[in-house]
Length: 306
Image (cartoon, rainbow, N blue to C red):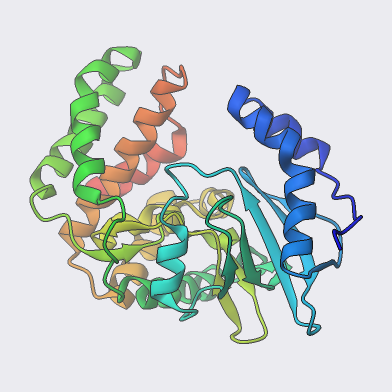
């Protein structure tokens, strides 16, 4: 028997995601029916209001045996194409468990964590950063499975884009910074690494859990060097970095903790972190911006000046 439960798509999510174009709007239109079909297929009962991030709807559910879970619905894209293989490779070690997957729609049934308690709720930054670093170390210890996007290709595409992007920046100092970041990537591109990277591991992508105190969510798996993982952690809760009164000192304290826990070569880690600054700069320029985000400049300056 098909479920008669109606799934409500939050207006804020529909409005923001719908700006991505006709394909996104068509997916949103089909989303209530898709959710209802999956609830029926996996014998799930809704167990709370739907939440959402930038690109996914997350519905708390209860399985037929009473186990709490979440149904995650997202439009299949290049960004999330490797999520299932990544989660299977990690197999719950420091990361949310994948309970089931529908390959036709990209929907995932996941272990339920406590969405009300992200790692950003931990006020002591050293404690929060060490927790994040220890989880990151466990994730990057896993070799990337075959078929994932690779940092080598991502880095090559960035370097190809730099000459076309630079004229969009108004400030000559910012153009010089982008060139410096590109030079750092060019020096490392022949050794791009083979670890399984999360690619977006920051405080709000770590949630409190029952199975472990904290578990990671929302990976965008990539094969590459662990140094390419550090930027989202360094940028986490940036307002606290600014409030410290010494941005450079706060950035370097975080960087030293991360590289120590992960056992990284600091020079390589600086280079790949500058690669993330380059990536963000290119994305911003593509979106029509003519200046770099202040935190990107401050973070790069801190690493370059050490």
